[in-house]
Length: 336
Image (cartoon, rainbow, N blue to C red):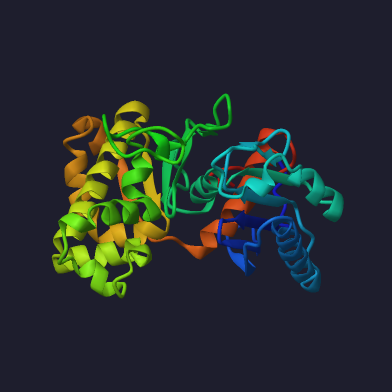
């Protein structure tokens, strides 16, 4: 295939922030901009505005654009180009909106959409820690938990576009009920908002917890950063919640290692910034939860979220889809 040098517009649509940027062939982010996510029709308008800004930046530099890739926070029908309507989706207003068609009609460029963590995973595989790997699993831990799976050089999307939803993998026989309706999901123990719920449920049993003092006595203000900070300082309630989170992450990694035998597992996202200092403890716990020989052959990395990774994921999605569909595009995994 020919190797175009034109940059790509990558877009990441999040529940609180939408980002878009111009990404070079080597993964360098040439320009990037963010805007708060607006509810209702404002979501699409914000996406358009940020894409227009990235395209204007390319024009100012005298650069053509190879395509546009968009990561969306939900189940995405890649072939039809929209996020599927789901009852517990983060941005339900985007459900069944033909976003790829709308953007393509507006800009004239090839457009590809996918789940945001699939895009993030492709970004790690194409430009980041997974560059050159045959298999890679990404866990993105933030307000919720998402996952992306690349096996034998192929992104695994599944029959109903839901492969990689590791946040809804059950790690408990009788755990808390999740927003998805299931019981004991990994997300209920590790996702930022749900960890805070676990702490609030137990406040009555820990009346002297420093968590309330940290939040001015308002339980509703307890957040994941408070839990990690107070756990490190020795607060009993925070330590219980963080201990459960680490054990749940270890169980999830153990299942992934035993089931998929990936070369690399990357744990990232907002909560991963707080988990990074606990990496050695988490890996120690994993050894009780997965096949040791398989684990020894797997590289597990906990890395803080990289703001560049969001728009790089959209760019990597364009490269991957162009190659998959037979368009002229750069070779995958950094091959020249």
